[in-house]
Length: 254
Ligand code: 13P
Image (cartoon, rainbow, N blue to C red; front, side, top):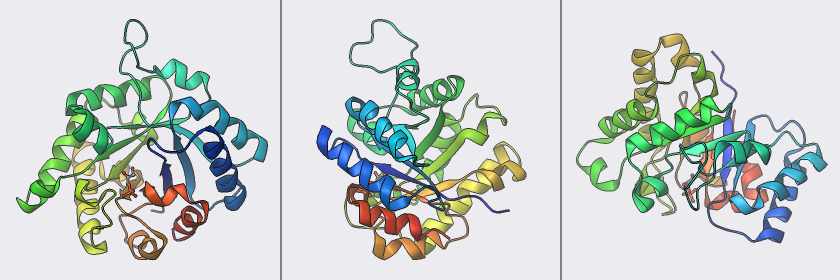
């Protein structure tokens, strides 16, 4: 079974309008129209339209993504952004449950699940982000935490909708710290997640679902990580703010 690798650039709360436009142009130009992997940029809300325009102008295959969404349709939710608004801006894919939203903003597993379902019900693709903290890892809880977050994150998601779901395994202790899981540790976590998906859905579906690795992925470590049999691309933070580094990571996918 061959899965097309998927690589996301999570720009987080960085860049200004001119910087976002310039980086989008660089990424689209450098990757060309057949990057090899499926590539998406996860852009701060205010710059979605601008980056969408650049993607269209360059004829790039890069997909437009948002970093979060509301689980509600519309109404009195000050500061929130609905899926209808995202679709209106040309967004195709969205992150749900990024570790910074879970651990800094305080989103629960149940809220992340509601967001993932809302994204899918609205016609968006979704990247469900999961991963353990350092404390949980040291307590030997990595697989249990991933299982809890995946079961809650995919609650009510049908097998048919799973074609639009990607899982991102991002150990919290590896995000923005320069510490990366060893390729072997990451592979073990990914294989365990795939086995879980097989038990929740079917082994055929588990074989088709892409599982990205995230956490201090850089051009220098991407090759070894992406070569692991159950790692199907990456979700890239810091290194995605440099178009050359990001391109090198995309090119490292088999
Ligand atoms: P870094 O690549 O900066 O560690 O961030 C990873 C991440 O959080 C991507 O979503």
